[in-house]
Amino acid sequence: KRPPPPAAEEESDSDAHGSGSEISEEEEAEVEEDMSSEDEEERADGADDASAASAASAASGASAASSTSSPLPTETAYALSHGVPSQLVLPSPSSTGSYINKQRCLVLASRGVTSRHRHFLEDVRSLIPHHKKDSKLDDKQQLGAAVNEIAAVKSCNTAVLLECRKRQDVYMWCAMTPSGPSAKFHLTNVHTMDELKLTGNCMKGSRPLLSFDDSFSSLPRYELLRELLVDVFGTPRGHPKSKPFVDRVMCFYVSDNRIWVRNYQIAEEEAATAKEKRDRKKDEGKASLVEIGPRFCLEPMRIFAGSFGGQTLYQSETFVSPNTVRANEARGKGKRYENKVGQKESKKARVEEAMRNQPVDPLKDVWKK
Image 1 (cartoon, helix red, strand yellow):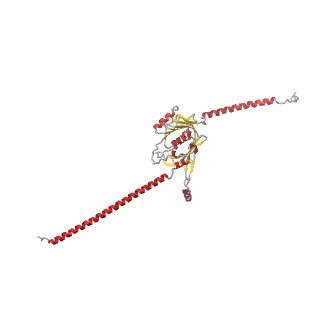
Image 2 (tube, rainbow, N blue to C red):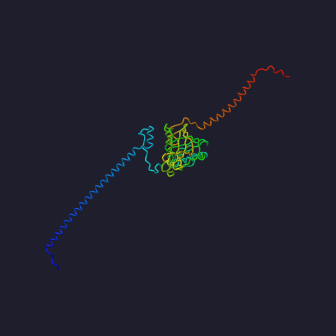
C-alpha cells in the first residue's frame, strides 16, 4: 500500500483547488456580463430597426396619401373644370381586372326583317361582344313581355330589338330589362360593313371607347339616352368573349334631332425611320381614326319608364311617321296630275278667247268666189 500524503501537501493542494474555484467564478461572472451586454445591444438594435420600419411605413403612407391626394383623376378634373359641384363628383372605383360587371345584352329581331336589316343586326352583334342571340319573334301583340321573358331566361339586363313593319320601316328598341327605362328609335341611313368596304379594322371582341358630344349634356332626355347607350354598347371588363384591348371608339353625335353613330379604329402610324420613331416617342398620343362601320342613324321617338312600355317620359314633337311621309308623297303625285290637267284646260280656254278677240279683216271675203 502507498503511504498517505503529508498534511502540508494536502493543504497546498486544497489551497490550489480553492484558488482555482475562485478564478472560475470570476471568469463566469465576466462571461455573464459580456452576454448581458450583448443582449442589451441586440435589444437596442431591434428597437432601432422597429423604429426605422415604423418611420419608413409612416413615410410611405404619407407619400401614398400625398400621391393619392395631389393628382386628381382625369374624370374628376374634367367634371370640376366644367362646373360640376364637388359634392356630386364621386371617386372612380379602383379596378381589379376581374370579371365583376356580369352584364349581358340580348340582341334579336322581329319576324319580317329584310336581308339588309339582318346583315345590320349581325354587325351590331359584332359590336357587342357580351351579347346573347335568339330566334326571330312572331308575337307582335305582346312583344315587350316576350323579350323580357327571354332576357330573364338568358340572364340579360339589357336588350336591343329590331322591329320591322311593312318590310321597309325599321324601329330599334333599347331597354333595360325587366324594370326599364326603354327608348324607341326610328332607324334610318343604315349602311352595313359589307356594303361600305371601309379600310378600318380592329380586333374582334375588343372593348370600345364610347364618345358622346356635348349635346348629350344639354338636355335631360339626351342624358338618359347616353346612360342607356352606355349600358348597351359598353363592354364589361374581363368578359370571357371580350379581348383586353381598346383599339376602337364608338362616336355618338346629335344633329337634326337625331343620333348619328359611327365606329372608328384607333390607328397608330408606324415610323419609317429610326428618327421618326424617336420623334414620336417625344410626341405621345399621336394617332388617327379610320372608320370601320357600320353606319346608322337613330331618331328618338319616345322614352318609356318601363321596359318596352309604361309611362311616357318623353315624346318627340318633330318625328313624322313614315306612313305619313309616304301618304304626303302620294298626295303630292295626285296633285301633280291635277295640276297638269288644269294647265291643259286653262291653255285651251286661253286659245279660244284669243280666237274670239281677233280683229275683223275687211278683205277676208274679197277673193272668195
